[in-house]
Image (cartoon, rainbow, N blue to C red; front, side):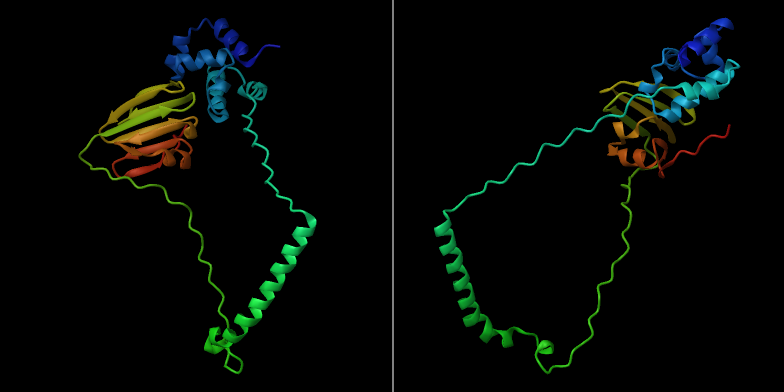
Length: 248
């Protein structure tokens, strides 16, 4: 059975198109097209980006994208590391006759001390309102304040300073960066890679796996913003918001 990548590659060959021709018309980078045709893009990006590229590529080749998307196979989810079994506490066993004598002696001693000390002090230790015969006040229950959602970190930026964005990848992912409306990069970011870009007014950033990268803007970490906005960020001197989706 022909795979999704094989069907795309065969359709491109039948129309005598090169990868450069497809890139020029669809704006999809050659490395993304190569990963699609070799059925490797599922290992590099999240499903939403893979489906988007397959749809764009298939429509350009005059293919129906729905059967191709249904045929896609996704890598199995990562298995979380199993926790270590609990360690049994150390139990010290006393000889039974000695154990019984210690328990009985401790119980008798506790009762005796309670009778001698607690009784005389009981009346003096009680608040005046709780003493027998004193008027009682109605109890007031505690008021639970509503729990506020965790706030995102704030940034302090001067409008006169340029924006400098540093990206460090924990795992391989895909990233697209625009600075002041100009496309700077759209590439696969390898694990351990570090990239730096600058802009005068704003960044438009899309990260396929926002939890797998560290983002630093002018020396201030902004990784929580990427996770909260699902890897779609509009970065300006006024703050960081979710990047609006472009109209088709």
